[in-house]
Image (cartoon, rainbow, N blue to C red; front, side, top):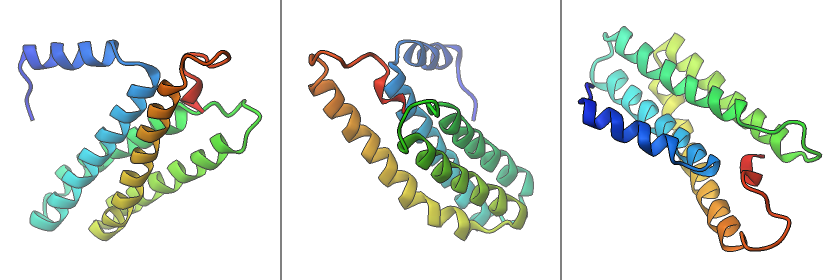
Length: 142
């Protein structure tokens, strides 16, 4: 996929102006995009190992970004639990890449979609309560 300079400037501007919470959603979107594209390649062009590899590596990097976004220093089980979920997804993507197994990726898709929807709802609630004292910017970073 090639992007024009205008498209790249738009993407860069949307990333630079996004809140930390919106960036999490963008990472989920990237994970879903690359995982779906990888499934399509594995099913329609199974001999195209390089395309599969490239797409799954991008999906794996999205998982790594999600893991890296967590605040593991917080006094909560949530960040650690999310880390283990993201780690499992990453492991499945690596296994799918090594084995050329589209089913491993297909099984992850509803989980990723569900977690993305949960984040969207959490952000919506966070923003609706944003005027409350004690809520700080980026508090949903877990």
